[in-house]
Amino acid sequence: MSSGENTIAGRAVRPSVATLFIGVTLLAWLLVLARMRGMDAGPGTDLGSLGWYVGIWITMMAAMMLPSATPMVMLFAKVSEQSSRRPGAATALFVGGYLLAWTAFGLVGYAVFRTIRGLDPAFLAWDRAGPAIAGAAIALAGVYQLTPMKRVCLRNCRTPLSFVLHHWHAGAIGAVRMGVEHGAWCIGCCWALMVLLFAVGVMSIAWMLIVAAIVFAEKVLPVGEQIARWLAVALVLLGIWVAFAPGSVPGLTIPGTEPMSSMLPAPGWAAA
Image 1 (spheres, one colour):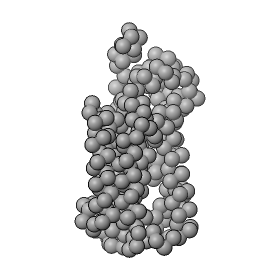
Image 2 (cartoon, rainbow, N blue to C red):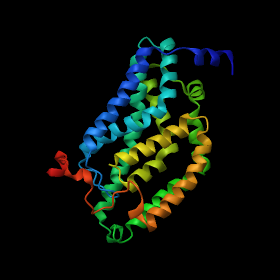
Image 3 (cartoon, rainbow, N blue to C red):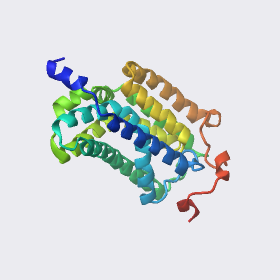
Image 4 (cartoon, helix red, strand yellow):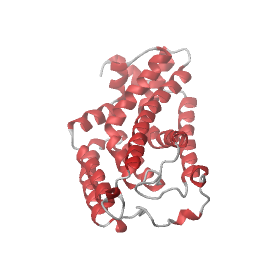
């Protein structure tokens, strides 16, 4: 590591930036818990109106993905304190760009979901090929863990210093651009795990927590790259389990059954 890299890595970020970032992440989780209780109908859970979905998706991504992006955000904040007159605003724009990338991904997911719903293929019903399709989607997420693309994207997510040194853009637009670029690497790393989330029930808080923990472990822990490989086997086995015995999978709500949380009041869009 060069002396310049040592200087960057050794700077201490302002406590206010770290506190605000942690506060935003915790608030996102609180909002998710408050808004999504009782909404898990398992695979195929309806996504509601576009406006409602976009709001809850951004909140979900803030809750699930920002913890794993903490090293990158904190490093960006450190560098911004030396290169920007308003480092706090620059950091907020970076985070905004990161969430913008994930919002674009969420809109693609919504469009695919609505297209399939519009076609209304009968074989997708849970009492027909539904478990096999959900299981195949989960197994696909496992296979992707072993691809060169996954390794490249994960490596870029795990090396924030390299990203800052090679992709720095000054100014407000530059901060947003860097956030979008880092978000794109993150999508390349984690898109298959989001497919898993759609496969088991995108409104399931339990599965959200599991996926968020997996993403954090892969991107932040020292053994993250090994975890990514171990996870490949686990996901393929989970896909087989869901395909052949979905009723025995812990935490998986079977469509058509009434979850315990259904006794809670339904959200406004569902009651309409």
